[in-house]
Amino acid sequence: MMTSVAARRNGKSSPDGSPSQHSSFLTITMGTCCSDLSLNQRHCVLLLVVMVVSYYLIMDATLYQTFQAVDLVNEKKVPGQSWSPFRPLSVKLIMTDPTTHYVITPSSEYFNDFTHFSEVFYFITPNMITFTHVFLAFVAVKCIVSDSLKNRRIGVILYEIRTFFDALDGAVYRARAVNKTYESHHDEIGYWIDSFCDTMGGIALIFGIIFFFLWKQPPKKEVGSLPWTNDDQNGNLIDSSSEKHDTRTYKYYTNKTIFWRCLSYGAQIGLASAMWDQTLWSYNDIFMTPANMPNAASRQSQALHSSYTFAIWWAWRMLEGQALIHYLLLAILFDYVWEFLRFVQYWGFVILGILIFSSYYHVSSLRQFLLVQSDSTGVTSGH
Image 1 (cartoon, one colour):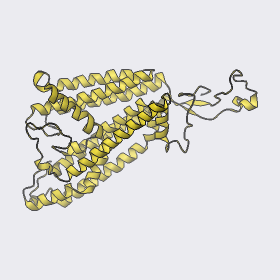
Image 2 (cartoon, helix red, strand yellow; image 1 turned 135 degrees about the horizontal axis):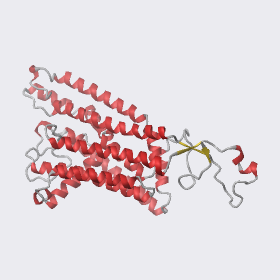
Image 3 (cartoon, one colour; image 1 turned 180 degrees about the vertical axis):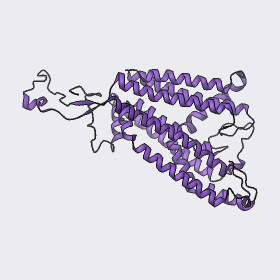
């Protein structure tokens, strides 16, 4: 069904399928986000973006330098030592997305150290905190479904607070546990409760966006103006009281397209999370299992400190499930969700597929190089 309607944002919309649309995605997004700001305010936003990106790059460079000098097998937390994003290192910490690694997790750790939360509220278990953050996820999604952009941005903030609580349950667990290394513990019920609640929060977010597009702001694409809507040819018959007229014609996307596009990104989040966890444990078996012979330990260290190993882990930092959720929240904050989903609908699967294949090939090559499954090397597989 064709209909002539006003453009969604300030009377402007990019035609669907425009050749330059994908290449100018970030520019358009920033312009849309800052369209109602003054010049000075736009400069402040740009400065903030530059500062955040610079912070992440500096921290990643420091992480790489620290990574080159550590032995993950012997990395242990020193009693009384305050939290550091660089010590003690583990495979999981290195493969964690930058926002969680450099902002959210340190905030939760410093909060616990400063307030002594795990000691003062000794009766509050990590699982209780976990159930709190899944409740916050549903509250955040309720705001994200709102017609108001302000409410949707509040929903983004609430969802990030949910992420803070997700990190806090781990901080409380590590404060009370004997093993204080940043690792996952598959043999404990708390790990599965946390994974289930994280999954529920992600599902709620995806379906919240589906409901928003179905009920609140159905997405549309410009299909070109019809001949009888051209002012020059029809004597300004549309609205003779205004000097300029929006004569563009739009077509609403079908419900099937909305479901497919949103669920595709949800599938990418699920695939990234599952494969990240599986890849993490493969690397744990290789690099965090003690070697019993000098030759094996030397090979283990050589493989660990290779640039290719760090490149694979850094790629997972950018594409793990939590990172994909952060990207989606940014799109909600900029009010550019549909354009973002269209941009990553297929490319997301392609990039994830390349990373998964590269990781599988790398792990297989490492096992062959280290002879992990051979008793003669002195390295024992964790499986």
